[in-house]
Length: 594
Image (tube, rainbow, N blue to C red; front, side, top):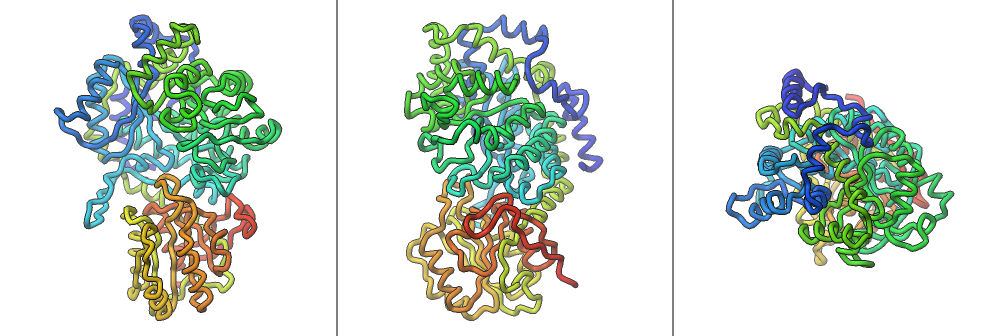
């Protein structure tokens, strides 16, 4: 729970947003039941183009820009000239991000809605980053491990807590909608874009954890968004780059992909995000779900009974652009049932396309009104009609609170999963004189290995560290092999395949050969997957394989503590790693005696 100062600050914050308590009733998050006078009044005051603008949300960084910069002039035009209804928020430090959102709100006559990808907590977007060249962590909001770490704990209480803290910190920053949780069932090890963003491959577990996460968010004033409907898990194609096609039967969809979404709708989720991929079993025309009325209106609205906001995935992704181009994709999306278009290629052109769709008879103005009404009613229910700015003084007592960090650490520690340990090398013997820690990551990943090695060094003062850049084709493997030969223990941490860093899920073949050489020389490397958990498929010969699920600092520290025996190991795989490990596998270890 938040400390007393945090509780006081939260009360101040919520008073400023017009909310009576920290809790937002689930019914308030779904559907439009009985319009308010404010909503009716605003809707009646909007021109056709202004209505279209309410459902077009460009992206904005949370960075500092000067008032006379081209970036700020563009944002001013979006609000004052185009009159957009909201924004999707990208990365920035907490105070700068909140101040910027306040400034944007102040420019807009109609309150703005702000959404953000908060899959791993508010810190997934609101962190100060690292100061170069010293790699100084500038701090920020709390970052949780990826969702699959929650899957490894199987703990709905922790899923709820992550949602709760994400909402408290996110609302303090001025963000209203979390584009989370990911409800895709990741049953395809080759999936290049979902992977650890999913809770796992068990539809029932994903449903339970997803609903708990949703309730944690929405009980504390933030709208949850289940994504990517009707399911992005069983694909080997990145929808940012091309159109995925899921060729399974409708009965398979009902028993796998749709299970978490049905549970989320029943649980009162406020928003659903669409999938830029085709499912012939639902729509034989092979258009992406975002553009399919059979998927969005027939299945989601009709069969599942969803009454909340349907948000498109980013409209600049190739999965939705390649077939029809930007303008036609916009018209088809609205016709299909999309309420909000995020991250368009061109804001003015997208608004014009929405208007043109009405004038061409592709859909009626009443159809557009239904989406605008959902957006406006959401603004009213969140209290933005009365108070749309956040209290910057309260922010410091809500965002990054130490008690919040403890919960993120608990998730990380409970998620650590020991898949293999044939030689019982974990925990590392306290008397190990020479330990070599090798980190494989992109050169730009300044955080990789830092927290892990710092925690290891606290228990192993003679630790030696080495860094291997994935981009470097001329690595001095003989030198690293010599270093391993002179060490008592060699630990190899791989950060390859973190789904949000645009790196291929596979490790370089030269790296795989290097680890195999260490094994053949009897060095018995301990491999830790901080990125793609399916890495074991490339390194089946390793005797010890630990999965940490993510490369964020909390996961690095948890992995080091598990390796040292400081904390227990209790995680179990929420996925299978064919053919080497089945779902549910996991070797439990008690803390080492002290």
